[in-house]
Amino acid sequence: MALAGVTVSIEAVHENQIQEVTLDGQEICVPPLSMSECLAKSAQKIDFAEEDGEEKGKTTSEEETEAQEKESSAFQPSLWPWDSVRNKLKAAYTETGVLLDVLNIAKEKKYMVLAHVQQDTNEPKSALQILAKKKAFGLQSISSGLSTAASVLMGGADRLKKSQQEIGNRQQTEFHFELHNLRQNWRLKKVGNSIIGDLSYRSAGSRFWQGGTFEVTKNTMLPSEQVEGTNTHSALEVVIPSELEGSSYVQVEVKHVSESTGLMHATLKLPNSFGKYPADAHWQTKLEVAQNVLFCKELFSQLAREATQLKSSVPHVVVGNQIFTNIFPSVQLSIILCHATGKGDEKSQPRPPKVEHNHVLEHSLHQLLREVHHKTLHLDPPHPVTATFGMTKRRRLAGPSGMSRADLKEMSESETLLEQIIKQARHEVLRVRTMTTIDRLASTIPDPQIMAHWSCLNSSLQSNVKIIITSNGYDGLRLTWQSLDLEIGTDSIKVVTKDRRILMLSFLEKELEDLIRWQVSQHHISLSQNLARLMGWQILSYNGCSGVGEMEDFATASSIQLVAPNNDRMLSIRSGITSGLHVYLKIDSKDSLDPSLTALVDPKWLNLSGTFKEIDMEQIDGRNFAAKLEFIMAMVKQKR
Image 1 (cartoon, one colour):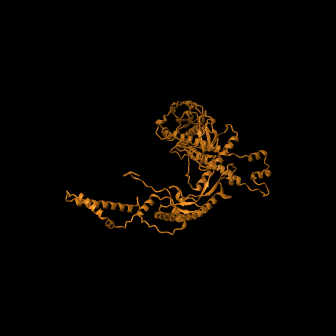
Image 2 (tube, one colour):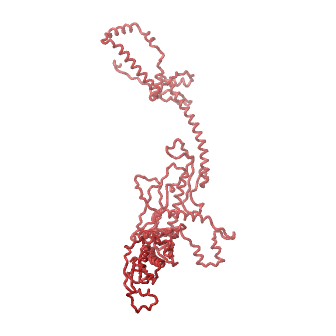
């Protein structure tokens, strides 16, 4: 026996109530109740309608006598007259607090929910239920709360089924509509139960080995499952091949390198992640990016194959994803294929430095490959129609025109993509060099003015510029202009001077600079000659190749001698390319002349000898050489 005062815990048997017994003897038990269900079951046993008066009436007389004795023993007179009022207020305050807590629970519904407890309904008992109750004697029936929860779950399941059916019907309609839009822009075909598409340029004449197939599938993700901030929901998905994932572009660089640096010392550049597009991007964006990757790979593959096959004085080098070649001494052209899948860790990879690449040449590369695709499809039709298809017009005329084998061989040869882009790069480098040289001379030579007019009708292999040399304030004297017409090619510059002489310059900047400086020197002599005619002075001599004076670093100096109308004053002007401009003056009086020379017809020839004094042009007023020379002629012309 248990000792007095020892608490004995009695727990329910860990057996669940049997719900059903199948025909093969298998018992299906009711799952155990949850905490809320146990609470509802316990609360169901309490009868809140029972009155307290009935319980009091049932007490025995013995209990009443014991209670009276306890009250008499516990009764003591109150020491404070308001003690009973305080106890009443305290009890009222406690009840008010409890009432407030109950109202908060019923209103906010955070911790508990007040619900009506339903009474158990007496259902007809079948033989199987009677057998189950006999075996699981002592266990209670399923609570009404479980049935309520089951009804709520069933109602929610019905609503979800209806919404799922509506979404499925809408997705089916959207899938066919987007598939129709996809078929309008891309090539699709049905292979079994799959829909396969093609991204390649084979329909445009491409012979690239790599295929561009993709698969079209139905998007099973619901719109509600999408992450916030993403694009609109699409009913279909496209599966891109792994080799076409990410972003790609062809980068062209034209940079100056030292002569000691060889092509084999080039650094291989591996691009980091760039141009990433979100994973939930629209299928049109994914297909366009993948097709661009395929196009860049085809372009670089074609250029790499041509670089290994072409023969040149400086061999082309293909290293990894780069192609190097020299277009001019110390000028290197590099073509780089940049392709990044975007799967690497962006934090671990350093950000690549900004490279000044040539956007024009990159666009030209794309145009050249697309032109090849266009020519492959658009062949000249044969004439007559029974002739071999694909024969060009020049080849058809080869027989009647009697073309030689050399002409036919030259006609059959065509430039590769690499040769064309090298020519364009050379022309661009030469054009930039010409522009830089003209701008530098125009800023360093204040007098005369050097103006360059570039033609807007240029091509990728030829540009034209007209250089005009004038003096400020004397633009009306068109005879004093010095003009040069420059035709910039791929590796040379054709120059047409004012007197229609044709000069051929190489790609060196020094030759063009020397030519412009020589034209500036000629402009000074031409300006002096025209000003002398306007001022009434006479021209004694003109020498375009003067051998007197300082030796020039290149070319020769020019000189001119002018005589005043009174034949007693002479100006000698010498203009050199490096020595600069010098003006000399000689004044002779008739009293100092030799009488034996009076038989000369014209006394102007008497001033050929004598001493010339150089004039300091910096001290003469005027903003340029033309104004200063005009001022000197006007002052010297006056008699003294």
